[in-house]
Every structure is written in C-alpha cells, then in structure tokens.
Length: 487
Ligand code: MN
Image (cartoon, rainbow, N blue to C red):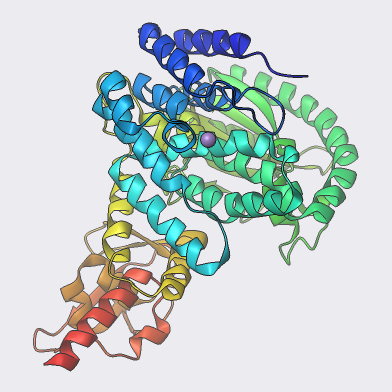
C-alpha cells in the first residue's frame, strides 16, 4: 500500500493547528509545494513518492511542537543533497534561518557510518551542528526515525549500518538531551536489526508475562486512585506505563548480572505512573503509597531533589502489594512529565523562549565542542567521547553546594579540571566529605569535594592520565603537560 502525499500533508496541517494554533500555515503550504516539485519523480525504495519522507519528518517535528522554521526545514531537508535546487534558492524563498537549519542537516548527511575514523568524524560534526543550533539535531532525529521505520526496504548490510549508528550514536545523544520519547523510538526501531536473535527472544517471553501483570495492575490502580482521592490529592492522571514500548531498555536490564535474564526480576516491567498537580503532591502521594504498601528497601529514588544528569525528575518507589506482588510507581507533575518525554524540545516555546532551549544541555554541548576541537587523534577522541556520553553519571558537590555532574568513577582530579583548568593544574590534594583522600580515589554521588591547591605548583602530573575519567581532564592535562615540556 502506497502512502498518499495529499493525505499526509493534510494530517501535518491538522497537527500544526492543534499544537500551535497561531502557526502560519501559508508558509508551510509553500514549503510543501516547493519540496513536492523539487523531489517530483523521485521514489523511496518502498515505492512511495520521495515527498513522503520529508512529510514524515515534518510530521514528527510538528508533534514535538517545534516552531514553523523547524517544520519547514524538515520539509526541505533533503533538497540540497538530492535535487538540483540549491541552498541559495532555499534562502531566497524561505529566509536565512530556514536555510541555516537545512545547511546544518546537509552537512551531517554526507558522512556514512563506516569504521572508526568516520564514526569519530560523524560525532564531531553532530556536536558542532548541535552547538550551532540545537534544532538541527532534532530535525536529524526526525529524519532518522522515519528512515528506521522504512528500513525493511533496504539491503541487509545497510540496515545493520544505519541501525547500529542509531543505537550507538543517536540514541545516547537523545538521552543526554533528555528526550526520552526520541531515545525510546530510536532504540526500539533499531533493536531488531542490530540484535535480531535477542529481539526474537524478548518478543517470545514478554507478552504472556506482560498480560498477567497488566491485569493485576488494573486492580492496584483502582485501589490507589481511591486512596489518593480520599486524601485530597487531585489526580491528573494515573496510567499503566508498559515496557512494550521500551523493549531495548528492557533488554539492557535483562542483561544486568543481578537480573540474569530473569524477567520476574525486572520490577518496572510495568509501572504505575501517577501525575499530580504540584511537587508537594508528589511527596504526599509517596507517603500515602508507603502507608498503603510496604516499600522495598533501597528502591525509593528521589529524582526531584537530585534529578538525573539529563534533567529527568520523578519520585520512584517499588512496593510489595497485598499478595506479595512487586509494583513500581513513578510520581511526577505534568511539567516533569513533559520534560521527561521531550527534554530540550519541551522548552521550545513559540514566543517567549525562542532560542532559549534548555540552557544546561546547551552549555554542556558548548563545552564538549570546545575541547573536542583540541583533540586531533580520532581514536583518542572516540574513546574519550564514548566515556563521557555513554556511561552513567554521578553528582558531586562543591563546598559551596554547587552540583557538578561527572561520569561514574571520576576522581578528584576530574572534579578539579571540571571547575577550572588552573584548579586542576595546581591541585596537590583533595578532601572528600572532610577527609583527605588520594587523588586517584573514586568519587560517589553526593560527595562534597574540596580541592587543595598550591599556587607554586608548575602543572599536572602525567600519571594522572591513568586515573582520570573525563575527556575534559585528559585533554587539559595533555595540553598543560605539553606546554611544560616546551619550556
Ligand atoms: Mn532525509
């Protein structure tokens, strides 16, 4: 069955008017006609007219409530690469802002995922594009998601290349930007191509277990709703949140040694997600739940007081219900929920905050771009960057209470360089929670770290390279050391 462009375009217009009632549909119509004629005669491997792909990309962006320029750039994103129409033509017709977005996508598109050098180069370009305009990466995600959805029409070798790249590069970046919705889609669409046997295994064991648990949770849901209402909590929503939509993250959990592929040990296979009006209601709800059911020790997580590094906020708890069943609850406000689903994209307000997307993430990107420029060796870059983005993060504190997020197993030296190069270069010791520790000791979340410096110190110790975890510290140590050598 071929997809009809006209129907898809009407759907796009409908979504835009729903999500953004003040949206200027005339420009969108012009962009569609422009793209339609530019791609006329071209086909996708599925047999569809090519225009279906940019339409799907724009549709995804519209659902993310992105602004007009981003949606237009989504419609035009493949034109400079695949047609005779140039960026200059786009600029003339749609202005500089749209042309810049399309140019950003075009630059990203020319590299293929092949071998280690290209991989590093690809990452590099993504970071540069993101730091220029974060919307570029959102268009790229939308483009990639549609390509993954139509991956079945490609030869096997290409399927694996594109799916692997999505899983190893795109999804972790979406995660780091806090866009759970995109991360989940990228992972689940890629999973079956990258690990087909494991995918089939999960699809075999999951459905039965899932149905049982779902039936049971319906009962728990009724009981909890009633109890919360009795206690004056205004429930915005209580819903069963299933992992059928997050197969890959379920798969990752099953591989953990403590779970050992035993599905019954994955407590959040299905969780109950409770949405309440205020943060105070979140904590009250937690109290009411713990009054009703016995909490499992060590499973209460306060991501409101200490959000995850990507900004995720919620309270989590796992409890034992009446017949000894184990149930996980996630409690959050509507704002926290939007943030968890859309991350950086949730901040894309049409009027007030335009261009003012999640500052913390943008700052993180800017730092990344700054130091990655100094690294010339691709293999080194790749290794460093993988460590930085792909591993778990911890939160530690400065003596004045500022939070610093670092990769797991970071040392006081990582901390010192994170605060400032000169602090790192002059570091002679460290106190963690008021105790002197060695400079290669591993920091834990919640540690208060104080760096002891000596102004007379010439520079870093080259041995530090062996224990530090962050690419930032490594790069700064190398820079300072090379400078010292030249003196
Ligand atoms: Mn495309």
